[in-house]
Image (cartoon, rainbow, N blue to C red; front, side, top):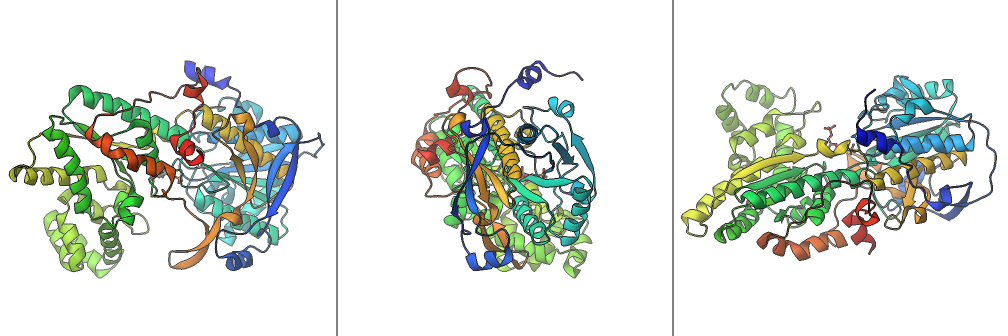
Length: 550
Ligand code: FBP
């Protein structure tokens, strides 16, 4: 196989490990834990895995462990560093006993249920070390929720003599990993389940999990691109670039990218929701900045827009909920709507059946966007919010607003737009040194937890703003991160999703500086991820982590 020069050089990179993982490891049990809320309900639902202690590692004396087999699953969206988690597990279990084996289930959790797997050998793994992507075994979005799936999975786990399963995923996948751990523990099935925190969205974090892996690399890639665009904008001085950034619901990616690049406008969904802003108010805010810059002769700029924005705008959320009901598959209203061949007539029909408030919002949308809300639906019949071109919606609405301002004499500039959506550009990037080291350490940590017989734990590596050898590795009971939430009409135990905190240091830094960044051109150009060179360039964690831990 031909590989690039960078791939070749990167293959030789030895990820850094915390000091406690370098030799033989001793486990230290800390205090017993409680869930963050709803303790009585969660305890009842997880009688075997609730209240377990936090675990940290220390250097210990070498001990011999019989050979054992482990299975691994990559779950959900790709995130840079997944291959290094697998490398860490592999090297960790081999260190405990060279006869141990690692099996990868193919295509995500579905591979466990469908008994599709591959043995991950040293040779097979070699080409994947320090590379981006999940292509080593593939990923998928099948949810492991049903007992029938758990039982089907147990058949293959038993057949392969697998002692433990590592599930690498986001909040939902780790919630399900914990349910699986509890199920196997209750059944005395002899299979441990360990989770690893993955998602570029950065919304799986808490007191014990400082960041999810992949966030660092993905945002550094987006920030490089944003910096390049800012340089172009400041050179040509003729375009406003509206850039939508991935992140299904939380705005951590947009916030971190803003801290790295200092653009003129940054929208944060959580702030929009907290202030109950309307689309009109968001458009006024953006048009105000654009007009001010335009009146100063600066007809250019960069605006960052989080992917999940529309669902955080209360009036849009209400509109989407109404549309989901009215256009539910098989309903009379859906049938009638589908009978319209003329798009404008279809829109008029929809406007007629919506509530007065939602109809007003719907009618204020550009036709193309209104069509996206009614035509593109997922298999469950819901609007696919991620397909809505929010950047174009805002661009068109801002344009209309500026036209009015011009008429009224408040604006004398020109407004030309370029639209971008950054997401897939970063999800499989070659992991930064931070993610390469963090992921390898997480995988290694998982192997130690398995060796010690733990189940229902998530691998945790903390103190991440310090050099890697000072990182603190250990395990956190997943039940500790849980609370009860309403999902699809039922109360369920789930890991609490971490949204951007408006009283947190990263957002406060943005809020304190954004007026200056809006008026002046204060762009920062972070440039591409560097793998070799000065530590402050190559091993720097995200600004979010730095500010949170300052
Ligand atoms: P995970 O939470 O599964 O890690 O995925 C995150 C994400 O990258 C989101 O940012 C994005 O909205 C979504 O996946 C897109 O996924 P897909 O390509 O499967 O539609």
